[in-house]
Image 1 (tube, rainbow, N blue to C red):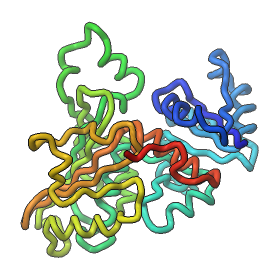
Image 2 (cartoon, rainbow, N blue to C red; image 1 turned 90 degrees about the vertical axis):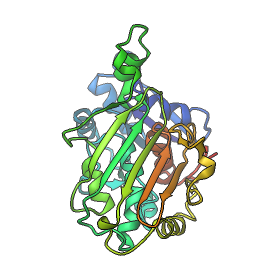
Image 3 (cartoon, rainbow, N blue to C red; image 1 turned 60 degrees about the vertical axis):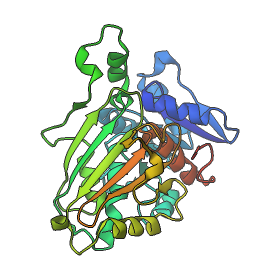
Length: 316
């Protein structure tokens, strides 16, 4: 039985990962006493006993955890932002290209993707690879996510009985283009310029949609919404976690509305294309705690430990 230690198990992502792993008979979860969670020596012992460590920590603490490791056999999956574009770390998005799964399987250091970045990259990268978008394209993207993406403090604020009225409405943030996911969005999509990105927190616990609108003057070659849909459908036809809906995604709409919670409690990402001969809108819908975080971590863990990739994951 392989041993896994979640450093930061008390946080939202750590709890979600632990829940997904708790019923498995092929993994032993190493636990740390609450009183020892900030004890460096207690953490050092567990970090070096584990076959795989999952870091669910702030960036600074993730760097500190790596410094405590001296067992060369211990693999690390980092769910923080700390190593997502770092040299010698593999980006944990198996669907990135035809070789990414093998890179994840053979690497001792893997960084789990950010939630917004997952949707943006999967919508954008195939278009750049096919020459529909140029690497220097100036793209715009906006997204809505459940408040669980903000961690414990934001969850508590939204669930507080006397919460401020503004929390009941959608709220945009990182308006000065300083969102922490922008570096990985730019790098792994294959862009030379970061997108103009507007994330929005909604008044719902989990579930998200990342939107990518495209106008003809942004495209490197002529392509309408049907062309773009066909390209994405072909690219992801063999990917079990990505469902490309029929053009227009009629079955995904509720009286014309697209809900961000339609893929909740799964590790599925719904990719949808809307538009006409001139304009195209791509939407990527998924659970920000599933394929956007903890589900993605379990998918990567399975690959890193040589287990069937979808073990413990729900797709429907």
